[in-house]
Length: 139
Image 1 (tube, rainbow, N blue to C red):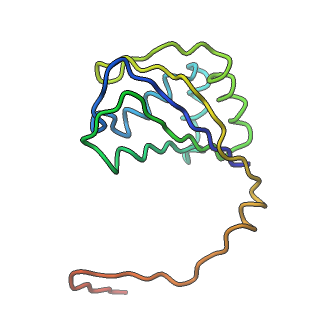
Image 2 (cartoon, one colour):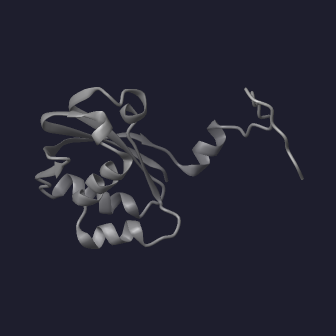
């Protein structure tokens, strides 16, 4: 059952968004988990989770004193693991690019069964592409 959590972080001083690269956000997430729990996320060849930090792509030069990261879990057995690490464990603060960052809020924003997800969204059979330069396709 897909679960979406919104993780909110507070910074000790403003940090430029461009410093919070996807690799940095990935590392920050894994620093919240215990070593054993982190290994469960790294074991499979297809990762059963995703992290989304939309501000990075929209406003890279902006400075933030707090930011949010969306965590999407795609396997049922991962939610208890993440819950234990995020809700019960005192995470403390972490150093990210020379700035102390603290997790201060975890909020579930979506919980849906796969069946409900499939009923809600229909497949699209047509794709429209606009090319700005000449394009050649070969079989």
